[in-house]
Length: 175
Image 1 (cartoon, rainbow, N blue to C red):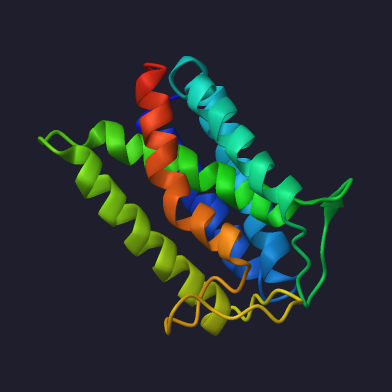
Image 2: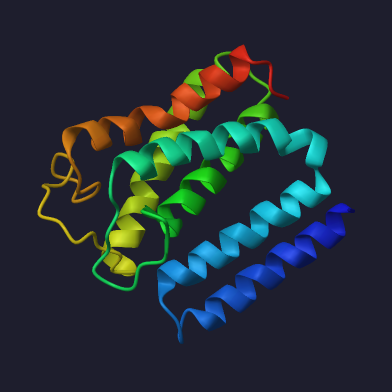
């Protein structure tokens, strides 16, 4: 697929998602949009993102099968795995790897780790405070940021998943 076509599809997905978010649950909208993004990316760049996609989904399956995600609004499950965090983690890690590959400086691992943490905190903040995406639990938030309301193990996974994913995909020479 050409770059212009991809941009057209991505803009279409964003436009349709924005409109549909007024009528259906925001988590479902995000899940559908990210699923379409992953599908189009895989169709377009099968050789380029195939391996990183598989590793990303394994990371996502690890956390979503370990921790039962139940939100205060509608939940869509595949067995006992909530599809929203499964798709969000998978897409987020694939996008992180693509950013990492695009950085052409020394110490890009340090830079991508900072970008990951900043992006994670920003998305968690937006999801919690703007989109009102809330877990149905009483876990305290991470420090005083008001984000990542989960057990200590899950908080640690959230913080280290991105850099660990980059280390593993580098070790496996995923390009």
